[in-house]
Length: 318
Image (cartoon, rainbow, N blue to C red; front, side, top):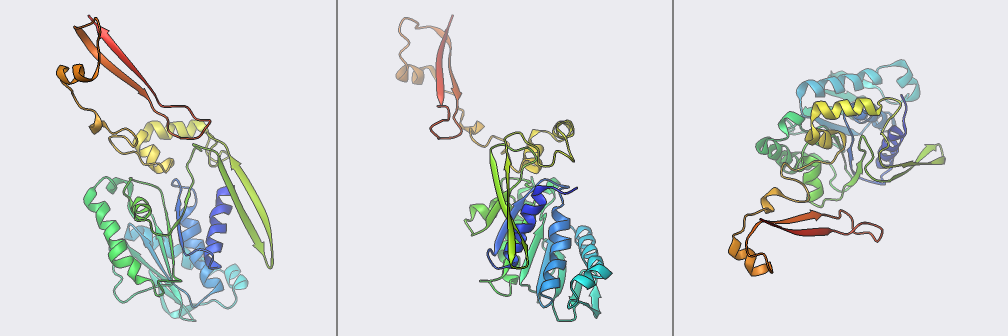
């Protein structure tokens, strides 16, 4: 089932192919075509236009990497692909599933996170789900993925200036590879597509046909679903109940929540003695009381039309 989000992703990938952007992160919920678009169709599309290009594709598991590579090769062997791209043909002497080449010397090499890359490089690095959700809460495994990217994978670009890196994944943790790259302030364009819109989203993209192009726009309102024809609010509520709030916020909303809270941290709350309270609060005619209560309603945004942060201070006496 077609949808605007597919057009947006494809437009961004074509912009990379034209050299308008060399670094892209796309965060999107699972089962929304990310692997078919980015790991199957896009490498075939690149090699159709530029059969000398070398592409390195990475996923978290060997079985997944193999499946995506096999699907990509299957597309390139179809008769319709050969008609559309008559100058791109697979080499009969180098056609392993995980490592196949074109007759012009380009190709698609597949590996896993922390897998073998010795002696291999590419003009493109495509990273599709670098860590599975079950491993994302392990500090050791998460750091292993992030370190492998920085110490090994990045160095495999044949051309550091013009080489392309595409990361497409569901968010799994604050410090997953997306979080690591954004925190490192490296120059990645970042696109986030939550399952349920949390703010007004304005999307613009162009479709090219030869030398002409057509402009498209989409306004997504808060609460609007990513693909309502495919998944309704009932199905999404079932997801949320089955997954729990933390997992749903990460994987579906692309908004990881820290276990202690993202905005107000539980560790900030401390206990204070009566003496310290008397030093800062004048209790007037109530020398004996049961509780002193502060209740905060915190503003999230700082715009003129947004609410203030408000605190109520209450003294509960006997």
